[in-house]
Length: 196
Image 1: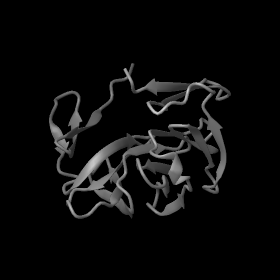
Image 2: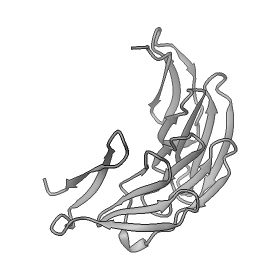
Image 3: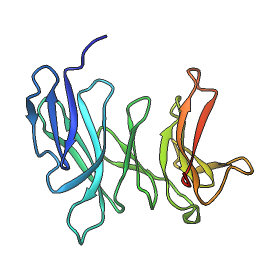
Image 4: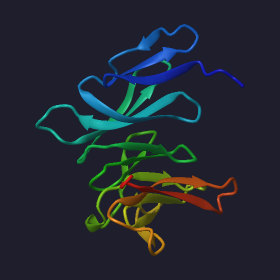
């Protein structure tokens, strides 16, 4: 197994890159002034994408970033109306999905930071606990208390809602993790019971 050359970690809401061989820090304070919630590498490890929130107490908007792992240079920075909590990269690497607990998930162009789509959702469904691209990248799945919302990746439009089986939905349980089979034809849904 090939040992990775670097690892991004969050220390007191400050992002640094640490070499695994020496433990020394290459870049510090890349996200100073913001609260980082989620980070992902590009498939070639040349870029790291992140999302989070403005740290100013009177400003509640979110941010999405792209940084070069070679130089530590900011490639782009885009503002969102809501604080962002989750970040996912599409299988092709051309789209970045950021998701707030409240509000609409956003699809960004990874090359430019341009907003592609705000994914429409029913506010009555409450908070989103997780979001995923399908293995073929054609759909986006969002986990809500009552089930899973399906969006079309190309249009950003909702195309289906898969309700939990009868008896599985309670005020204390919700789907919070999805796993796909290797051929992409099956999906495991983990439902968490909050009472225990």
